[in-house]
Image 1 (cartoon, rainbow, N blue to C red):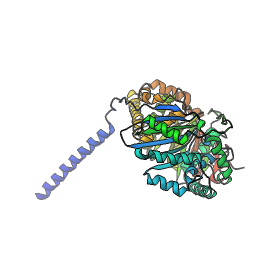
Image 2 (cartoon, rainbow, N blue to C red):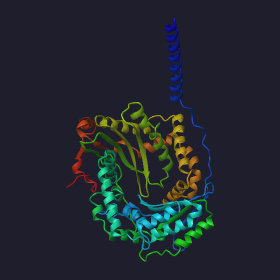
Image 3 (cartoon, rainbow, N blue to C red):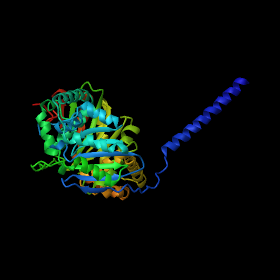
Image 4 (cartoon, one colour):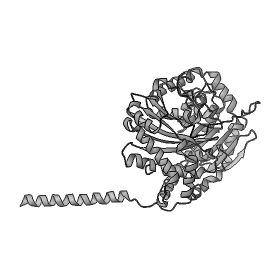
Length: 487
């Protein structure tokens, strides 16, 4: 009798747990729709130009006693000489490793004593030096920042250390299929144009970089008429301008004119599409990329583009839903729309087991193609817009985030008040706009494919889809050339 009662209790408990589990799964499968977007008014920037041409933008935001200051040089890795890929990035990194009056250790100790951070980096289109401190410490932090921007020493021992660190990093990066694929994809999309090389350089280019090359980059491009200073946080505009005048007002421009760089990049065309396989037999997985040229940051299609990309990317985006959720072929699939000064690129990516490399490439192209030809229900579009707006709002919650946003607008010549129209501009994009953007800008017939992995596991299936596959053994890979193949 007792055993029967115990069995009944256990059975009842199991039924209750199953009901709870079913309810939870049902709720998870049908999440509530996103709420209506909120219109947020961000701080209004105040700006002025110093007599030497330095543009200064101050964004007062007093919620927290923090200040971020960023000095942006409007020349990035695109100005690297053809045989010196990585020189602009190395120059930016070395700024904080010694000036004519302070060693790298003294600079680090000075910033640490202020409870702040200071770093220099370069990307495409710009190099930046950024400091983050409590608002009470912004004056001494700006003094240090101005010193590293204007008076770097580029000591030989620091150059050698930076080179060794970069070369060591490359050895680790080249063991990762995803990194190799992205570096190769830049050459596939941009060829031998300035955007085609790696920002960080290559194992062949880094040893060629000498101190004179770093000095030349600095003396040519680090000048007030090629710079923007953005200060955001707990600071009044008048105080921000006073700091700019104190530490950068006597910064002089060189007598020579700023070089004008004309970047021309190959357009993705059906005839120019490449399907490149980099055979890396030791790879445990395959990295799969679909890549092509895209739009510049100041293109009128900017908001249509970011919404279209949001439909494809993210956990609930179409790529991840099709490749990971439905088929379990990857831990994650996503896409990105990288917009630069002259042009940009689109990339869809996933990592999968070697045997499914060809299948994932086909699925990625199919989902991109469906965006131009298939239905886009309002429920899906509104959800993806909400994800996009949420990410934007999160990025604006810190002083560093808000300074980065305004600095980007200034760098690309976009009106600063666009930031307060962001929500409305995203909401104005309709399904027809997304489809038109995908049809004209993401045409899969002119989208290239790059796969890095153990080629014998996926190459036969890939050739059924694309007869003209370029196979490059990883030992013959040359990232310094558009051909990607060592001579």
